Length: 274
Length: 309
Image 1 (cartoon, rainbow over the protein chains, first blue to last red):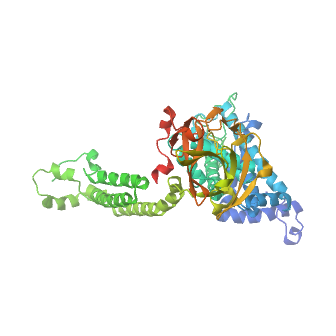
Image 2 (cartoon, rainbow over the protein chains, first blue to last red):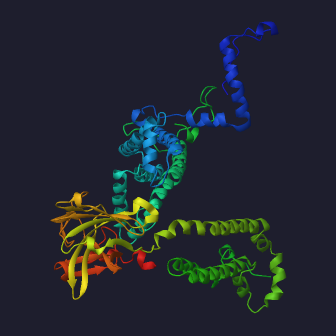
Image 3 (cartoon, rainbow over the protein chains, first blue to last red):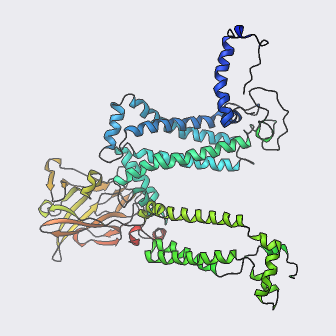
């Protein structure tokens, strides 16, 4: 925990009440945090996760990953709220979208965030991927993280495909017809894949509910799990240096000198630091 | 006393036929999922029985390898010595047994639970739903050598989402039987709605009530059929004349019941030669859009969901 060094020697009780306000505020914050830390270690965990060394010559391109994560969190949050009002049946889907857009308070905003945020998410995925590729950050020892990230890209695009049907207007319907039939042209398993996506031999109510369930249960859970794995690997392997960096990325890491008390605990060092 | 046994012998599994039977059982289950249910049951029984025997064999304390090395000594006489051997006693300690049991039981429970779940999710991809006959109304609505665009509900229970369109032309009688050309408007490229390119007489649109649902019949005079999505075009017999489609348009079989034209199941067409009543079709079972029915590419689609009924 943040230790607050006493600014003056302990005073007798009467004067103590007149401590400086800032001290009292810090104590006010620290007491519950200490309580939590002592019982769960969660404060130290968060600190270990967030306060770490990054290469001194890292730049703004390194923020694309967390930008993508933020875009995903926006999609998850707005998606949950949209699910309050959306009705996934052929008769009501279009009407419920109309209600969300025109009648629910601020519904237009939440739906707009979800709709445009979807494009932002995909664009950021590609930009982040380009940064990793151009910086060579996919090389040893981070190959596995590249694979996890690529799976996230695929799942993200599946989110786009399944979410596109949900407004249930002409564009959504026919784009999905074409999309499903594109899958159907795959050799051998194509026809079965198309039938699985349709939930039968014709597009109908089942198609809508299947896409809805996949869009809001299956894929978000899978994406969330893979993001945790992705972050775990980032924490374990550290942030890579840019290609022009004199620091070698991926090599054995130098032992770090112990630090004094401060924001970064001495424990966060060695192979985890940097 | 038993001679020295090398470490490499210690963990050799017993030579056994059981794993083979186990594998046969699993293979039978997988094949049975596609082919027939009795095969699934038989395969499951085989797998369980052989799996049990295999596990029992694998857990038996002294391996037969050890016995063979002893030569003619009867097995019964040796066993007390083997039990005294510390290595042998430690080979399958109690906690190892419990660990295996926990993992095994957990695996069995997971399997039992997930088989129906995965089956429920995946099996609809392999089963075919029966096609319902659609009543297109009185045959008077379809005069000779004129096209009518009929929109109808494929399955009234599912509602408007099952509305489909067919182009119908009565070709007159052929060899004493009435002949109709009934073309599905589903584009055989990727499934978009094909339109009749030509005048469309909305004023003479008829709404026909049948027992199941309402349908509309609109006179059209197509020079050809064309698709709005990717520019596929077909002549009035359904043959491809431009764009990406891979075969001629799908058609419906038909029947006439009590003076009403009935749509039976749809089928796919490779190529149409000739016109009208005397046209010759290369008919195939219904394929999805974009799937070839003839030529080399047809070999890419050896199985269809409806083949596995």
